[in-house]
Image (cartoon, rainbow, N blue to C red):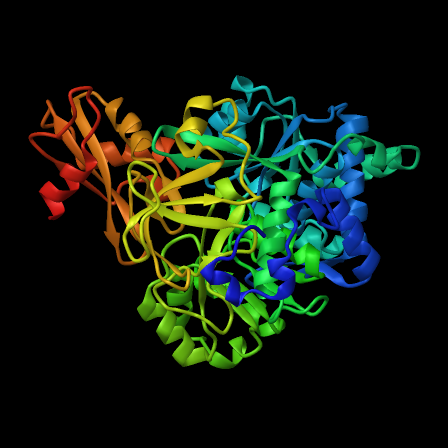
Length: 567
């Protein structure tokens, strides 16, 4: 680790000595191989449903299934090393199998939000050049609408009841399909994951799975992880195997005193398609031999009730709204949380009041962190035992964080400025987007667009954002994307979108519309947004105004718009 920083006093000698170039595993296939060598028969992943029905695979079984899927991709579908395969799935064993299988095939994964609209899905599939997609059967009809407009040639469907015993799988599947009627009829030709694994298993008998990753190194791209920005549609951050594994190691070093190898049971309620859960729970869990309890959806909060009742959870990462929601449940019992050794919060800002109430009621402190897709996960975290409410912690081992002015000059301690970072887990670029890449990567530093203050001990506080991004329940929402959708309506003259404080989601988008037709209603605008945008991007409010302030070039002056209407 270069130099001596104020925050190094919170690090162990091992953390101080981190050499990201000498990690025991340099690729994701190596990490699962190492996990199996240590934890073969230990439980790796469990899918648990709100009813309490659950099923588990061991580390050895997880690797075998992943190898079967890798063989299916390479031998049956004839995909090549470096081809992109998308996963559009909630938390379940199938996600883990598919994700590891993609990396074992030497392919590149791209995680898709299952709540995306067909339009959003189409953009990511085309932008990432996906040739195949693994999609949850619950949303197969979304793919039907746009697959012909993409380069996707192969479709694999999975179910949240995959890997359950045969009879139970049949019963649960019948209830979902025929009773609850939540699985739509899918017209696109597809292969069920179970069938794909069976076919891959036959191929694997004569195939050399290790050969699929020949030439794959830590510098090879593992993931195109999509993130919204200020320039409209989402962009794919190119994350290498090295970036993903380094961030998982940075997190492990920060938590080594509280998380014990082979002993942890992690509740995975945050979505695995999001970088936080993917790297800091799934991959980090593989590193330490953890048992991941996968909850397909934590909404409503009662969906996690059976997970806490059936398993003694020791590792829990959530967001502010989940912690607040759990405490409001009538079944909330502090005893259910008494086994937690590490509890973290990321994504949206953690409200101090909620964190204090949680600690008062459970005896467990919430350690807030700060990160982003572009650094493959976490950048700063409150050290266990050194928690400072309202702060997002100190830089993780190997990372350097500075506060700079508009000219890029470092500011004195205590002065607010833009947060910039240099860390070995950084993305290489935004996929096929050099302009956007150049805006945030400068001389080896990532410019976050967030305004922060760092104290004399290296603890960071985020006080504002320089970018226009709206942070809704931990998800980045680009105002431009919402404006583009609303602007397509007849009668819209101007539109500007800003984020405002919201009690439940941290922030929420509000759209200001100048209309030429009084017949254009709020409901008409919202209906159009629902057709094109996923739920968290839909404005909470539409305000009709006489004018939207813009620059000479037509760019919306969001700060002025916010000040004019919210002070």
